[in-house]
Length: 458
Image 1 (tube, rainbow, N blue to C red):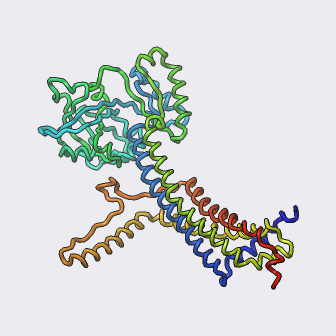
Image 2: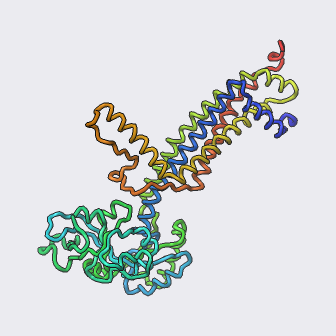
Image 3: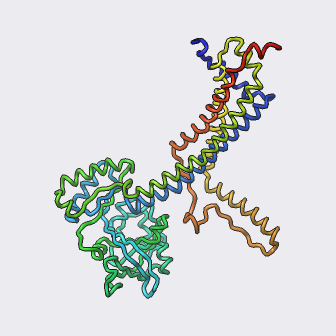
């Protein structure tokens, strides 16, 4: 029995390669078709997941870098702001920015149009201290030269009490531009007799675009001291903390919490309502939805490998019937069921290896030129649509402008593909193992082949 289990790899490889490359066999054409199917499945799944990663990570980075930060300390007493330098010295911390946030309603000066607005008060040095925010917050219009150099310099912004940096979509909604006056009504003053006052007015000195529609539609940045004057009497701020590796957030949060417990009395923490949270808690529902979306896309597109496995299964079963004489001969000279089944499994391994490698190589090439690929598809589809329109409507037809990701719908300036090694490994193994397992299970019929019966008339 042990001799039967012993496998000669060179012999298996030689026989399997012969079976794969034998042109006279119908199963050879089936093998080539299976290789193309695996390559197509790996190509499609890799490109789709890479584009999805680009979309999702773009949103995630905008949220973390502009809004929620990696670790937050809410309701931090202003009397203890001297601790910022000590928090900055914690291993892995990139930047610490205090801010004050208030919600309300905004309208343009002499305008009846109103829109919800979240004002975040930042210190003037925030844009030079927080490089991540400076990178993800694109200032598309600026009133002064200092705004234009902010992206690469170390200049302080929002130094004036009446300056506001407004989202591009909100400015468009309210019909405002640079130098215009915007009035703000906080939620605490919503039922005040004098709703909009001179103290709540700002001059738009910059318009930003974050790439995340909700921020561009409902956010603005002002000086932190002005935000404190507009907010309630609670003398606290929120600390936004960026770290080098966002997946080390729990470790960093624990270190910050230990430092706070050491420096700030428990009674003062409870009085102010101080809490430490990470980005996992603050955006739990949204990031959970993104993970579910990616998982479902994996499952749905991965169904193509089930179809490929079924084709390989049927092809290998046909191959067993076609080569029954050869299998009988192999068994007659001493090869056992296990060795012969390994030949077909090795054949499936070759099919999966060639198909998955070819598909992955082509997918990586497409991901590196994804923008050009989508432009080519859009041009081809647009050309055929225009031909069909002109055939049906003649000279009255208008040229069709086809876009896969329409900017008016998806709020995208460009398509990016983000490649993650873990995704590539999973997809590659899907293509490889689907062929191996299908071939192995298809070769189960070998046990029913009797050498004496097959070779009786040979």
